[in-house]
Image 1 (cartoon, rainbow, N blue to C red):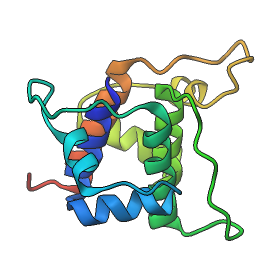
Image 2: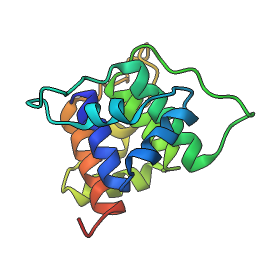
Image 3: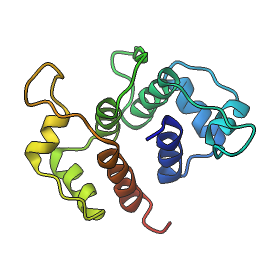
Length: 154
């Protein structure tokens, strides 16, 4: 999945307007303009479309954690320079204060079956042999399940 698709999905799920999006980026330590946010949310075919890179998306996800859970030790977390699906999933889990059972329920809303062991493997350290890479299909189903849970009328 592209970073832009992840951003669009989160925006739609929680019905954030441009000003809330700018606020979330700010909470994550990145000042952005409405034009930047708008260009990141455009379709790829649009000539004003701009890709959002890993560091700004990490700032947004950190801001989402702060918005939903509050600041930890009054520090703004440092945005990672590189993101993968496992990190995105972990940040969403933290932001929404989800337990494994909650996540399995969200996957079930999409009729996507994943065991508790498979789920825990996604959050392991990459150096462990049980670590499992989060494929696009898993993240996509989770994001779509979030839409069904948090915005069921859409």
